[in-house]
Image (cartoon, rainbow, N blue to C red; front, side, top):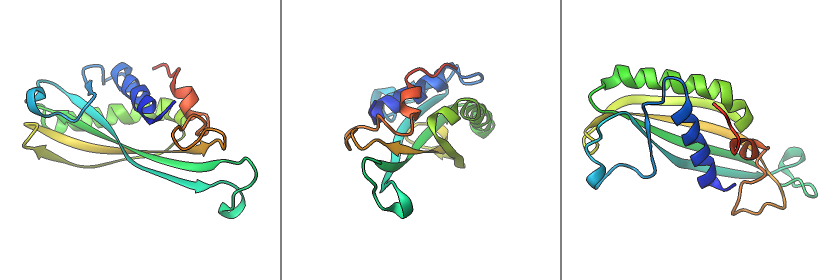
Length: 159
């Protein structure tokens, strides 16, 4: 599965997660006719991807592949709901990540302060998720198919 597939799997986790079912997972950052938002929404993007050689002390060993750290950004929006609504969504999101994130290589979840987004006409809370794993040597850089098995598990995550 590629990074888009990983984003889609995480979107399904949000859509099916307790306390998150009312959240619309957006395929693109809201703009134009998608505004103003009418209910809670989330947009998932890739914030960073870091690859380092696997093996002892960072030196590549035969067929070991690469260590991978993928940081995803979740922008949660709550038009009319304010910061309290976003705090509740964040807590529900953390609960889902605690329950399902281990199978995805979850290392860390953190948030930034809640701000008003003029363009969206909504409060927004940005949340970042760090997933760590390994890319198999035979998977190539255009795919994270072998990242510590978390991508393989993400295809069948049940919430």
